Image (cartoon, rainbow, N blue to C red; front, side):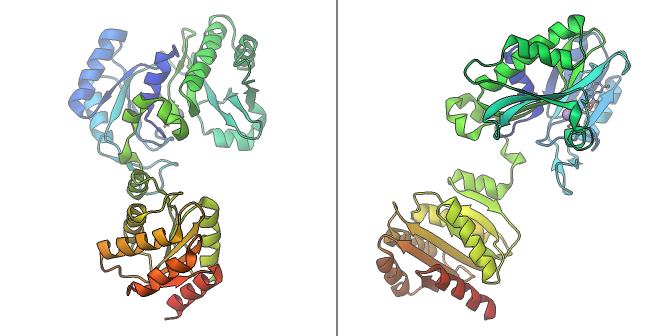
Length: 397
Ligand code: GDP
Ligand code: MN
């Protein structure tokens, strides 16, 4: 689960990571109040107004702006709030900005005294360990650094038995070219950052840039945090951090019904149990001359309820010309799934596209009989080959 910068920073702060302080605002008045409060706390008129969306590259898209006084806060917050922000990570349609973070300006007195670094903590699947990835080339696109100057990216592996060791934090500060107070502050920063990542069961913490201020303090200017979905049950308070407005509406609806759904561009909707079978089904659709409209794994407990939810989601896609249901009855009995399909079909009523149902496994024959005798416009198949032939018939007709 992705969260906003302001939420990620709040988590970081709670673990003792120094951050660029800020206050989130939903409208211009709140943004002005926030700027006044920041002036009281930090004594400066200058603030940055930062669009809160689940995508990076906001600065490049015009979603991060410096304001030198209250009039500029009004102007910049007014321009950013409500904008459809396009960044290299949003796609051409962009994302609607409904919140801004008004943050203290930490680049005083100028870029010559400050230095930006890159740092992230994530799981390195090849090493099977968490790593801290860091670079002297902060503030820019890390993918570009990786492509053109890979020797400027360092990785520190963390041994899960002992966790981050003090010498590793010092090594990182040293490799970043720091000394004196900045070196000491970076050591603390790294330790606190790793603790925050570890204790929240996160999948990724990316801080770009990490800033060395002109008075040698190290702080997080940005925070891109991805919480591990599989560990969310251990952190019930994180549920409140979810912002479904940032997610694909069909995928949100699917996750509400515990369906694994990914929208694709083809014309054959598919409903399958198990990710592996779903992949094989997509291949079959292609071989039969169609293109899959989606990936949809209904999971292990396909019943009338889940089948109906899956139908509803697939039917919202106007490109769908046929639906292929491919269920292997291992734990779940095929006749129960067939009954689920029939019930869902009757409940939804008039489904405008042909449906091909392929049920294999426990009670497959009974299931086929149920479907064939239901009187519904559903074509049944037991073999995958038959299912492919039914799809071919749909496209030949
Ligand atoms: P991103 O573009 O989505 O990665 O958003 P960031 O939070 O990283 O901000 C983008 C850029 O805005 C940073 O790399 C900085 O160069 C700049 N920026 C962020 N905070 C400040 C600030 O307090 N003062 C100034 N002058 N620039 C800032
Ligand atoms: Mn950034």
